[in-house]
Image (cartoon, rainbow, N blue to C red; front, top):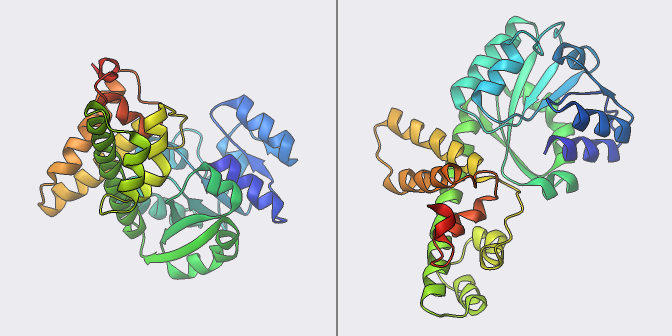
Length: 284
């Protein structure tokens, strides 16, 4: 995601100055492509840029890049950090406080799209933070998005994103069960997908994942491991609110089964490997 966002901004005339990735070769190759510098430390990234985008895997990674031994807030005064990862709302609040202490600003820009949309500049972005910071970031974010929405204060966009992914994950698991049962009943799955698409079974997930489930094409755009993590964020929010969400809980368990079976790096569409009768030996 981060690489394609950088490519898009380069295409739109912005100067990409510094890059960092835990995989040094990834950073070096992208830096060569974009005429940028692959930095050996996170502090070097901040030193060479005015606006820094972060796209990391989880809460621990986010805390690490802002407060670890090597972190982004060295010489950060006046800098703007746009944080795009799907993480817990409280971590966005922690990062905002750390950045403000260092004289910097942060904005959460949660993405509800995938790798292709990042390259095309057609992301759906949900933003949270101080409104004046959002206005500062808005020209950049418009180049990356087809739809840009300011949700409210820090943490609020992360809550919305957690719910988006919770529902998406549940829809994906339900679609896998519907197609799996259709297959077990001897139905033509192409026909079944067409019927789903014209009835109450229609969904965005049907468009993006249905054919892949049928053809067992699980090239990763959004991994099962990330699906489990994101459903977990929503379930933690539900627990704080005193709500029980049985569908979300069972959905997370399905993705955790994939991880346990060594399938966690497949696309979330790979949940079909657990539900089709002739495939579920891969899921245990």
